[in-house]
Image (tube, rainbow, N blue to C red; front, top):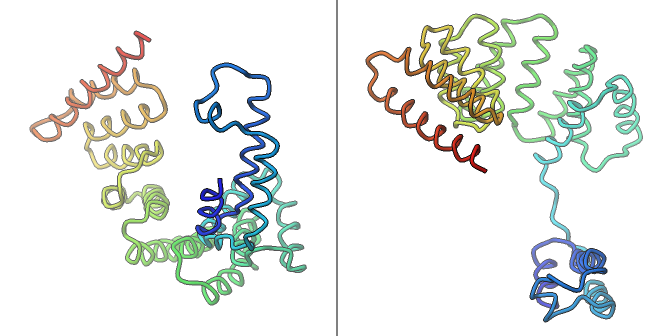
Length: 280
């Protein structure tokens, strides 16, 4: 226990997590005398052990890991995207910023900018973007924010310029790539959207394959479109539908031996997986 608590503290984590975990283990196994893990049989979690762990933890001064700024920004984005009342959220964020009631000013301003956009209150967005760019390092999410502001202001040309500039700097960023490809497809630029999607790392994200299928379909690559849709349905847990799309892909593939081999291999792989699912 001593070594474990010391390791937590040295790594920048709270040493109190050790006794807290012991307490949860004690509660979970309170009424169980059988099927206990061997560790609990040889090292039972007693009240004395918990108390001793608490005592050891108090000897370490707080030295928690500094929060990752990017993590806080992603939390802010999630907060806005999941809010059911963005008008209320806007009021709350403005109050928090005015009263300095926050742990990370970058995150609160980013959330405020996103919420202003969601409410189509574009006047204050640029102010937040300017502050973020001035007081933080260059981040892809701030560049996406600039593009989204241009879109809300119905300046499509500027939005596409912002996306292109961002992509030149962050050519392999998944979040930017998906957003940019979506906008390219909406602007009848499927060939470029396909290039963007094939440039970013392949993602286990159904929406990635949905966009890729659209880009392939629009550019006349039917086999590749069905292939992409198959992956989309597979990632959504619909293996049987994925297999049907692979069948269609094989029907439409022409003289591309490499593509045929890939589709056929994936078809056999999912067929075996579906049989296994049915046998369980």
